[in-house]
Length: 249
Image 1 (tube, rainbow, N blue to C red):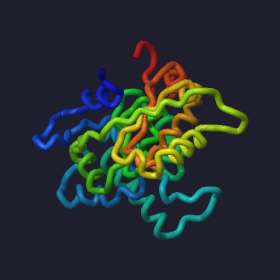
Image 2: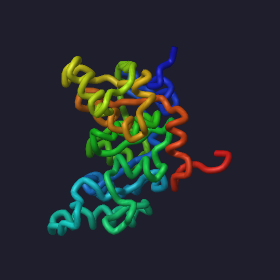
Image 3: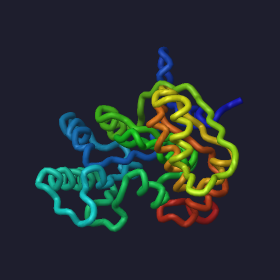
């Protein structure tokens, strides 16, 4: 029987090396201010971004909140991301864009995060997008450059782990409590090297925000990423979002 991981992996595998490493197609690539090293690598090799329409810039990791002023160093990083995005015809949710925010929240809010996609970002908590039934995981700076240049990523398929959580929530109990509960039982490295698929009545009863929290915290238990199979709750959240499919699609 195929797991959710199997289905998503097989759909995106372009090539498999003799050592079992897979070359995967990337449907969405999210970049932030910290991605300037990757753009510099491309520039040094006179390369362009392979698929600008599948790449999105989000000012996030160093951007201040609550109206705090920018330091010169942070302003330079933000300006560099916006300049790199413009030079490569990438849509960027910049500092002055009302859609700007936490990169792992902007994707779902805008309908860029969809079931069945492979999503990469240079941040470990990219696993957040797995709440939508996406194959989503963080990558390093060198890998960010590889995705920018080729729209593909080399990865070894992780082992699968299924966590089923049944029952109903008590007062004041939420998604973070579910995550802390399984981590307390298995340990902070209990899911090391595994793709976690969450299921059960308690998981199905979560809002999409709750599911995003649960998948986000997979990393705190050592998991490579977390996933939840899409259902009507997923589709209802996606429906009508700016970048989501409309009509018959």
